[in-house]
Image (cartoon, rainbow over all chains, first blue to last red; front, side, top):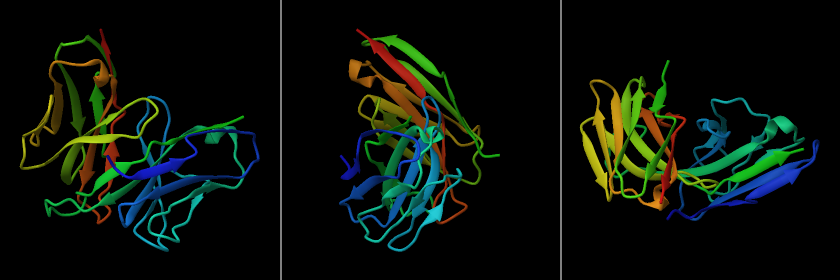
Length: 119
Length: 114
């Protein structure tokens, strides 16, 4: 079982509120990721980080922002939540596969997710 | 366009029966293919990973196959249990970048009935 944690697990808030979703891992992984997943749909990468002070936007445009001040911590912030932000947010981290194959062999470990509902 | 398609979208089987889930992909250049299990309200958990040189990989009652020529993979579950009820997601990685871009299927929702 991977040691990656997300809080809160469930959050219901009103429109316009600022929220921060927490993600932390104790595996010492350099790479971390945030995904957004709607019911019955595929995961979409919204942010990722190669390491401390590194953040990049993913494939799906998102109004959220992230920071990576410490290796183990990768919080996601929404300055002003809207109903369109209602979704499940999954955090993941990865290490290098022991196969030694070229890029893309990282095994990603996922947290339990945060189910966000914006009213 | 790189895509991952899974079928069926949902499946109901009786406890103890076998089933096979399908995954077709168009991702290129191909690096590896993973099957994940995602329980309701939880994050995905890796079941198997296969590179282009591997055509079968087992993990307990789960057996994944890969045909890199036809770009197809299957996940076979033997002697299903109630705890197998979950979404099974096929994930294909390319080797076009150091990040290792992942392409996710929408998953097959498996329900095992007693």
